[in-house]
Image 1 (tube, rainbow, N blue to C red):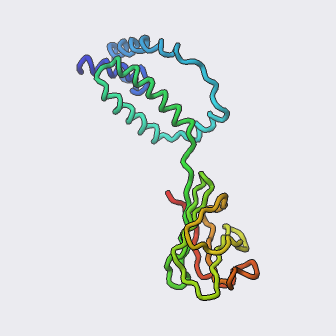
Image 2: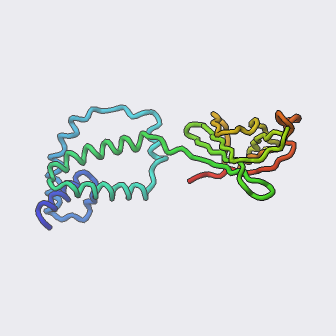
Image 3: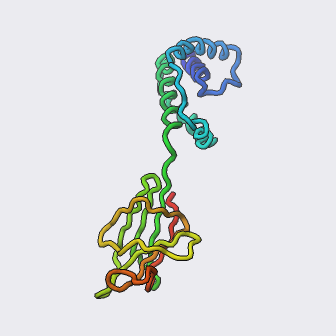
Length: 216
């Protein structure tokens, strides 16, 4: 192994991005030398009180496979530096920033979708998309023929509920709804009603149905 590569590996072990369990006496001395050189960096870091609940969020985010993948990516990034001194300063800063961002940022929000299809021929008539991060549901009418003097009304039947509730008349164009609570297993429907909507508060003739599923 060339001296430059050996010194770079020693720096990686000092930073903790490379395992030190199999090093020989020469490698150990090289790593300890890097640890002594890097130690003053800790004196410039002011102590910071962690946010409330940080420990619990860390536990929730730990996934062994992801950690292995990130360590592999860090080693690949480190190999781009040819000079060990540049690597030590840059890698220490990059790792600190990466850890801070990854721990504090929230997990990606889940997204759901329901394709509401015709009971007679299976053609889509309505698409409902949910973003749990923003709480916004987007209702996209695909095109359902409406007889004269009739109206189309949308309905939501939560999983386990006995009766659906109305979401209002079908819009002509895509429409955003705030705080529409729904999840996988819920059913959306479209009914054919007298002009102006259901006179009973329940679907008169449900003609389209669709179940919510999670989008990965």
